[in-house]
Amino acid sequence: MKQFYGISLAFTFLFSTCVVAVSKAQVSVGVQAGYSIADLSFNNQNRSDYSNVASFTKPVNGVHVDLLFNFPLAPNNLYLQSSLRFVTKGTTFTPMAQAQPDLTDTYITSGTRMRLSYLEVPVNLVYKQPIGIGRVLVGAGLYGAYGLNGRYEYKVSRNGATVTKDSRDVQFSRSANDNPSVIRILPWDAGFNGLLGLEFNNHFIVSANYAKGVIDVDRTKATNTKNYYVGLTLGYLFSREDY
Image 1 (tube, rainbow, N blue to C red):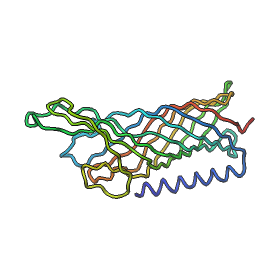
Image 2: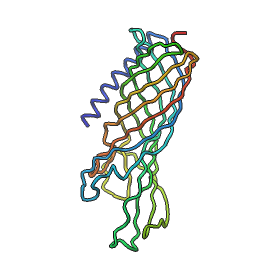
Image 3: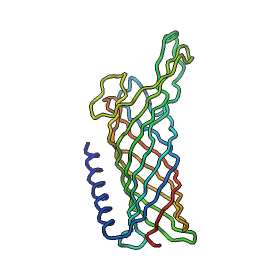
Image 4: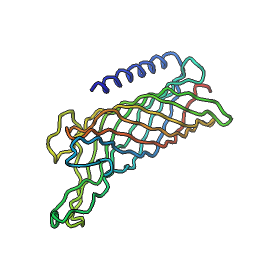
């Protein structure tokens, strides 16, 4: 929780700076959308269940959509950039090893994929270096996010063959989870964000960003789980503060 409070204070400071920037400078507004590759990092403490949980996951494909705000700051080429972002996070569970002989004819339930939808607000300090065709963007900052909904997909197998597939809702709650049949995720997420991109003279933007969560979103005691994702984005600024 100390990490959460630290991120919250820093995020509040950056957001307050945004408000001050809005009152003192022209703001450019735009829209962005793109492709995201998300996963969950696991630091499992229940070693009797898994020897290495991370080895049983791979990224899940998703999308993100942004309403972008760009605030020029006092030094030339320095900006505060924020957005209201819908983003898909989660993970895909890879098949585990073949069942042992003592599990023959046993029905085994295993997760296949988990998708988590968040409303996210990244706040980045961005440096824009002019070049012939536009400006190169390099930035870093923080993000805060709130979980909207999620689905946990699973299958039931017997002797290595899939018998049935199904899914259920992910619960977003601060309450601890001691029920193995329930998938419960902390609704709040926060972490660090970085971006690299190119803002063209015709107002189009292409960029890539990396977001790494620092909050344990799993509500069980056995596992420490954090979000991270990479996003590729295409956007357009309706106005530019230098035009």
